[in-house]
Image 1 (cartoon, one colour):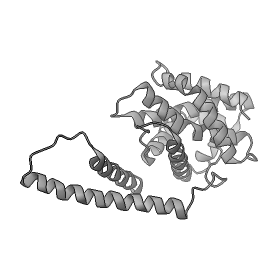
Image 2 (image 1 turned 90 degrees about the vertical axis):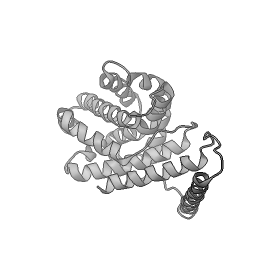
Image 3 (image 1 turned 120 degrees about the horizontal axis):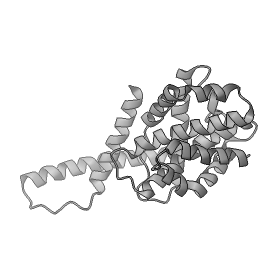
Length: 242
């Protein structure tokens, strides 16, 4: 319930800002209704100014930290030994990473980011891909890598499906989703192979690798077998990246 509440508060913030800055509304004749709208508009401006000030102060006083060992864990660690605790960590870690990546995108329409996306994806993978999770924990490297690629593909496909639900799914919006959500997942998988590498460095490597393949991965979301297509890309990345 707390996750949904936080998402609703973010939705309210986004709505208020859209209402304040929407310049496309037609000019209406003055009257009682326009006066009421003026009062509402001023209230919206006050709320938006307060939110903006709070964000500015938080960024100035609490600068954005590096992604460290407590902000990202190996992929299998999000599903075992305690899947409930793993879901909480997965949701918080991936939400934080996605927010950082979204802030760096040069687009007028960054993807929507909600904690419930990660909760839903985690549950879907546990429900539909349990066989891959078992292989992930105890198989030889080649088999484990293929299983890991499948888990990454399933997570990404489900997160993007939710993020694009109800919005125009254009090639640009699909690419924005890929660039926002895929690097954190890939960095977590890379951390599985070598936990001695700094998570921040792995995230940077993952972001660059995903950016180079974002167009192809965006097309894979529309393929007949999106998880299989995405898994092939992830398998190649896991093979060649450190």
